[in-house]
Image (cartoon, rainbow, N blue to C red):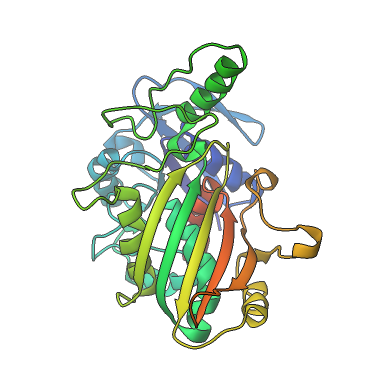
Length: 339
């Protein structure tokens, strides 16, 4: 079986990664149609030895398309997603536009693939930090239930786009040369102030709400509830940007309803779908972002009991946010739909 595919936002970091993942997984695409803004139309991108020409993302561009991967802004998804569906496409959207819409399934295939049965043409890809966390927690949730999660993220520059990565590189060069470091992008392009990421840690990802939490932090709360279909889980998130190029890391403290030793948790996680455990403190083995530029699994280490609370564990989790946190998860959704 082969299908005709479109990628909206083909020139961005997620769109480029999605092309790479399609090739790696031998996705059965008879046509890959690249779509982007009018200013990018006419450019070419290599895919499996061919030069594909980018077309403007507009309603008529979805004629004949069966699967449309949206790797663009929520505004674009809201305007063009329904247009793609009206022309017969299934939309898999990586933006936040439809994630909390009750009529749109929010999918991590390792956890809630069955929810795809109820889709009405649009399927939402969760936030990258949420995907990485819930994949790691799924085996524990199934075994002993989860009462409370306290999570701190350590998010890579590439999570803010290609421009943030380039700015980080420029800041490192400027610092090394003794020049002032310029900052235009982080913590958010729309923020009042911008700070350098090089040799720094920024405790803000996205904009703050009046409650003191950022949009990124609330995404982890609401999306986790929807994915597990369990609103009883208490979640306290802190999202932080760190000066690494790829992979988000997360320090997770999880309180369970039933007791679970670190040994048993390690065994459960080792058998978990999409999870690789790297946890050998004698050999100083644990997941680190630098090791996984092109991996799709979620890596878990530093598994240990919480010495301050019963029925609680600490985990260190690393996942590539452009791959499993975005592009790979989207392709896996399409693979499930294709059967």
